[in-house]
Length: 244
Image (tube, rainbow, N blue to C red; front, side, top):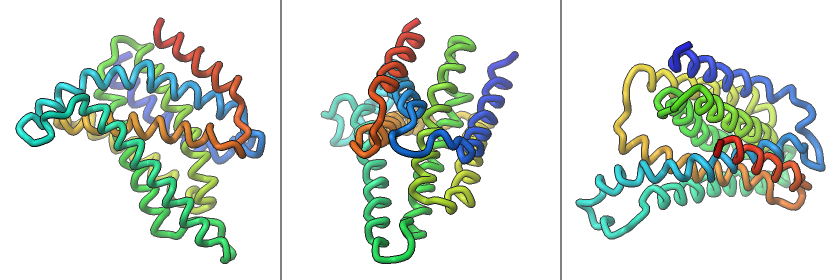
């Protein structure tokens, strides 16, 4: 079976995940579902064992492109972009939280409508890049592609759970459709054309920072009552698989 066909099957798998998390009732409540903590460990392991080392391949592309500008004295440009990605998604979460707090005196505990659309747009781009990488990233064999799918699949479950908690029925009405479509859009762009290498290098680095923030923000707050043991098992177990 060709990687092209497999990548399309996995893209459809991501779509199924976006639509099925609504019915995963075991994710709800406090203490936090051990499955979410396990998934968080898997996603973090993927970032640190695979994605961040991958930035070493993107760093020269970015450095060459900025060599003619005043930023040429900076080193590790890809890691700086990853840091910006982390800061950006932190800003998105802060915006949502502030909007919900401003609604404390109203009958709604949801963010404002414009905040929802800004938040979803950021994840639309986020998902589209992942869809593109699903077909355009270099995979040595089937297992490389499968591990990419597995890590991002559990990551999407975490993201969907958080987005649904923040935006309630609005996410189910609009958000999950847009995020599912963005995966297929990114995959379609990757199937039809090759995007400029600099653009992809910047987006991969940006997404790496976003994944770190989106996982840790769900695991670290004390009120989540997350399971460290489940998180650690996911982290070590998946890191071991990747190193194999």
